[in-house]
Image (cartoon, rainbow, N blue to C red; front, side):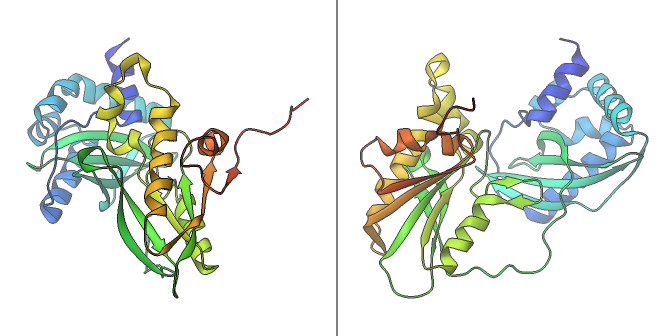
Amino acid sequence: MPTAALAMLLLSQGLLAQSPAADSGTAALKVAQRYAEAFMGGDPETVTQLSDATMQGAMGPAAVQQTVAALVAQSGAFISSAEGWRESDVQGYKRFRVALTFEKQVLDVRVVIDANDKVAGVSFIEHLEPETGEIKVPGVEHAFLVGEGADGLPGSLLLPTGHGPFAAVVLVHGSGPNDRDGTLGPNKILRDIAYGLAEHGIASLRYDKRSLVNTQSLAAHGGDMTVEHEVVLDAQAAVRLLREHRQVNASKVFVAGHSLGGAMVPRIARMSPAPEGVVSLAGLPSRSLR
């Protein structure tokens, strides 16, 4: 595979992130901004200076030049970059977005920063405006770990206003490395469902997917990895842990899966402990399409 094609593949999948990170907010944002400007401004020396060792090897001057050429061929001439903003923290990494305006469209460059304020990953993705204003949470949201220790997945337990114990729903993601909110472009599918459930007095648990925050545990299975390891076992653990929570009615725990998660809910329903019921959202059809 040509260098440019390989670089674009890695960039589009966000696979160039290697080292752990700690929080250093403002300094990291400045690094992300400088990196984006240097990358698009034809300054490979600054790109190299701001990168960790892995990124220096993956995105040398030739690869940067080829990647920019591919972006320009797709989106037209590069015009300008906007002020960056902090998107999220994933497994210690700090992720920032910087909007890039081209002749034909606006794209975001996502820059991942490590503990030493070095760039550990980069991807060019669909543009997303940062949220403005405060979104009112319809209840109380608590940090929740699905699993144990380093193998656990960080999540959010949303309890409605009022007195429990509440009926509760485990929200299961679709395919791909999704966060707990099911973020897709400007939409946060699972968060919106969770908020809607809370408004009707129903608790919910959503969590970051294993393929987003704990890829090492999946890689450990090698060629034997299946959808059980990626989706089903974590949903089973979430059901079990949710039943143990004092504010949840253990006899009223359900699972709602979206897309791939919706296709997996019959399998989740057969596992022990089984939920009281399942909901498939845009999952596989229950009948033949013929």
